[in-house]
Length: 463
Length: 101
Image (tube, rainbow over all chains, first blue to last red; front, top):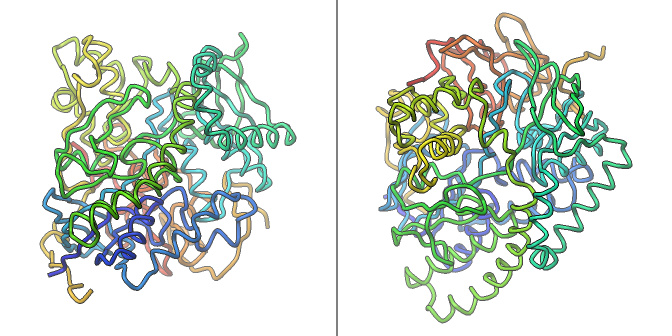
């Protein structure tokens, strides 16, 4: 009951492309997504926002319109508003929609769970008025909401895109405070060959810089000693740049240090992960088709390693092709023939990544936060606490839970895990891979006992 | 009347419905993302932490950080994962009802 050939978690670019591909290949397909409409975070609310705010959000955002339409295909069971709280290697998935828990099983399962923003542990980052740059972009995409007086700070291309979108929305940021150092850019030049192959990304960047310059948005480079000022809300961002102390009064501080794979589901399934030194994060092991160590489980998109929306589409198609061949819907020859095109495009999309990773690393201040900086937002555990745990013999993040509850709040380590790994690795002299990550267990998101008690099998056996 | 809150809507449009947040009545866009609508309405603190009681507000807007927890009609939920419906009774999530280790 409720079994489908191909079950997908996440309706971002990877999941949407995979669903459309799977349905075209004749697989019964279901796609679970937490949001009320398809798009993921990159194309959040694209069906509504595309026509209304296309000018502000730009041409790339409108790529999502067609992908979202693909999910509304008769052969695809699209289940929005679904919070997945358990996924098993056998393909069984438990989820809740409006407080009612259900289960569904896929003969093949694709985790297309996307990215999270990298933790940004800075003094004051828990204050109301501080949010991620991604959050500001979600507000703009889904709700047409912009901050009036915001400073954008951190590292990465998203800073410039969102700043440009805010300019177009008539509310330019007060300033961009950028943490990459000059030597990061020099190091990145080694990867210039790849960057030139991915020249479209570079051309876009040049366009954003020009927009920001025309709008007169001040940019501060190689900024250090960032601190959000305020007691019960953000009131200013102070920092050092060009050898001078600066303080910019504002109501909103938008932080960003790049994105990392959201591995909560793959971790909960105990799939093997490895440390990606270039991306400075853990990535689930997988082959070119996205197949993981569990043959029935695939990963695609940013959740399988950061590559961006275009790469995610290609990876989603590859996973669907492999699953279709595994279930006998197509032969391996056809799989390989069709797959070759997606692999070529994927390689082209990934070409600029080493340059971007080297040019926009997370800043030193967030990689090695000061002792009094909170790293676990939920349980208010500081960097100094984690260092003290290490001095008392704590070797890894799981032990850190027992030492001081880091990672045990409702976010389940999503916004402290990598920081805690990094802090412990620095203290113990182990590598991040040796240090490891939190053991993630279901439920992946908090659910009520009533939800669990009322668990029903999936009712959609007719599709 | 133009209010000087930290967030604003670019193109306010569509029907509004009344909800109550911590006793005060707000007219919010029907079906809108609740966290976004409350930010535009000038709400700054959504909950207090169970450890120090520090105020918190939406941080990730994608259901991952849990800083926007509020109690809606008696159930603690993420405001950023909830749509505005007429008559919602909302309050700041009490610290004792925020899950923690």
